Image (cartoon, rainbow, N blue to C red; front, side, top):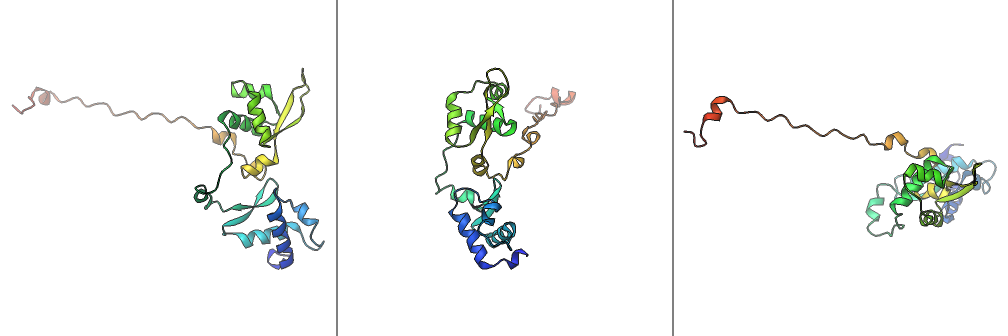
Length: 198
């Protein structure tokens, strides 16, 4: 069945499910509500096509589907919609390290950052639901391993960790400073003339 042949009742059901859910809705979750003759991916594709170009669009986030403000309208809404509190720089650095190196220990985070990691920073990330303990490392002291969560993917609009920018793309090559052309020395005749032309 193509996306254009999806029954209206199935579209309404998928729409209601995504709207009511606080988390992205997986195809598996939708499939539990659909007749066996319908594939969840086909229903989601039809619903996404219906919302394409509107103020709210259906997008893939963290392995599921979620309604999001259209990307071109988001900057305009920042003036009136309260945004989540920004994380401090240390927390953002820590979160980036965890996202790219997970699972990772506190000592490994500190080594990469080149600075100690306060418990307050870890607590802020835990409180926001952006990181979670993922077991312990088989090493002396059995330190806790940290990993990012689906909330992290949702908050940053990522389908999965493969959507993170490549690390090499984040490294900014320092641009050489432009070298001004050498000053041109006045010719011998010009140097002998007085400023008033005499």
